[in-house]
Length: 102
Image (cartoon, rainbow, N blue to C red; front, side, top):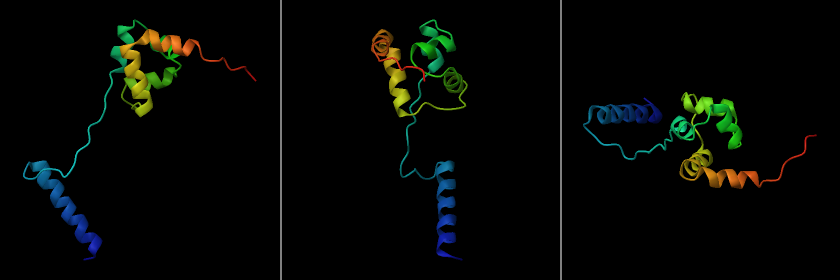
């Protein structure tokens, strides 16, 4: 058997032992979660109005809420700020320069 094959088999055995609780993983990753629907509902906004108010796509909001996609790190940070201080985000976004249609 090749060196790669041996390493793959050993990795599979290790994964199986971890799954059975006989070994611990060398490392683990915490996944950040934000309940987009809860934030939106607390603000009493529809998906379309929430998206428009905070400069997001309504389709993206739907995808996040239906767990088809997950917000990236920057979106997670924005959602946390919206949850904590929505008025501040609205003021900041209201002061952004408007783009002219071409």
